[in-house]
Length: 248
Image 1 (cartoon, rainbow, N blue to C red):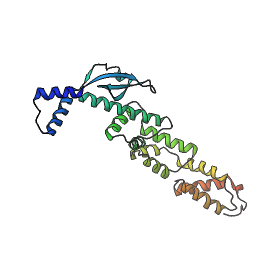
Image 2 (cartoon, one colour):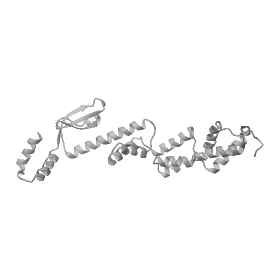
Image 3 (tube, rainbow, N blue to C red):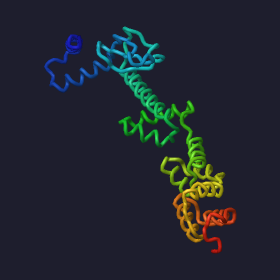
């Protein structure tokens, strides 16, 4: 079929006898101008919400069923329309892939971008997919940062320094990080982290207690002033945790 059309195009435009590269360029131009015809629309077996599009008898791309509903067999698509539809398909697949990932737990925008890059998705497609996710409320870095800090505070308390580093690694903007951490009660978090650690500690003196608990809290990212305050507070509240109670 393509050969017959090409021959007709060649005869009509009197290109025979020209160098081969002339044929190639003119044939591409002919295909661009003529477009391609939709010869099939088939709902995918593994995903009833997507439709396979066939152009000139060959599979071309898939589309969400709501987008495919605008097409019909016999419809001729220009090259621009085909490119736009293929890009739409890529954006939809990137979007679906990211939403599937979000079903596991919340992710930041930067994490989703890195994930899609590893899957080989192009930068333009990623930008469009992320913009769509933000419009629909799937991505919100401020909400993610709040979730991350609250989760840490509840299950594994950490200091501001550690939380700031973690959020930076997640690609959260500095202004969002500082805004979220501004209301974080580091003293309370350090106190609760210390109480959890004390249950696993065996010490015989206050100095040993200060050293061990202080090292633990500093590793959790708490500032030295906060660590010192919390340790002295616990020593005053729980003097019976030491075998040697006479040491200052």
